[in-house]
Image (cartoon, rainbow, N blue to C red; front, side, top):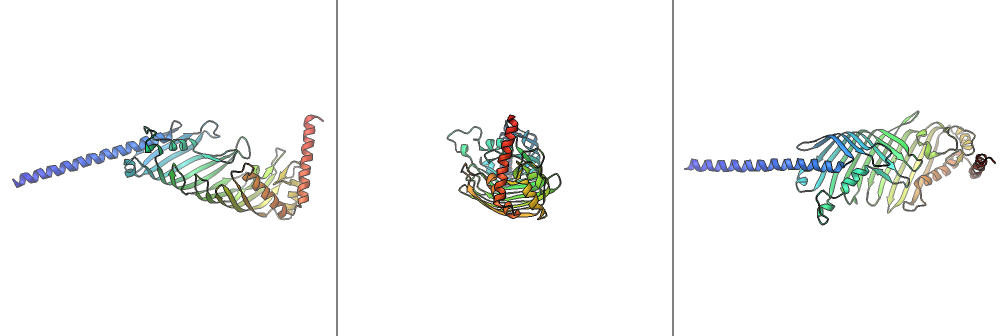
Length: 373
């Protein structure tokens, strides 16, 4: 009798264990299916991956592509050899999205700076991440479902920056051997600080320099505190930012640039002290009165540089309201640098004014020639 009771208890326990095992496996299968469906949804109609492998603790995507939207300067907004995602499975089972980490390896990521100065990256992904979950009703809380991403890492790739503020089509600068980290993304509010760090190389015609950017950003309010540095970058790579040319021939014959900017944005007000040093700068004087270097007549700049072996350091401070349509970071920086270089080079204000007069005169002559008068 006792043996029979013991057997019944053992069978009952085994049955409970089996049921729990089935429930656990079912929950795991559901979680894996849920993860895969969410990833497919996030990729959207313009995204693709050769494979999406869902494991017990991570998801691996291979040969990932996000096509650029119409008008995007590159075929893809993102291409990656592999993306490994580690989700919080417990949160997923409760219909909450919490990504512990995402590692993007072997990537090409394009970033566009629009004519108004705003930055765009991964536009399609941003749209798909922000839209309501499939099947959610308007009154459903999941429409405004929170999404938390603890850590994103970019490894062994290239950032391609397209800048429409200096030229159209956009001027392109590639940051190679690049790595980056993004910590703490809390969607959809994005009101909390997100830490960002970027490092890489810029390959120029004669020199390869390094670039780094780091700090925190509150994406919703644009408040931020960041540090940007360039070290040993070929000056020719900054040609569109430093030169105003009438001729087609470049004025920069050689040199490298070091730059440090400590930027703080509070309530859309920018305060950014910095310093720029040009090493062994060589300018070619083409004899065209329309050619200037930081608003200084090229001839005067070439003469001044000869007495300083091409090395000049200028300190500056950028201050302004980013919402003011009259305030342009590019123009403000060029004005500050132009004044600083004029002083450092010993070019008088009268000399700069004369150069401006020569520019106007040269422009008048060019128009007369164009009109045949």
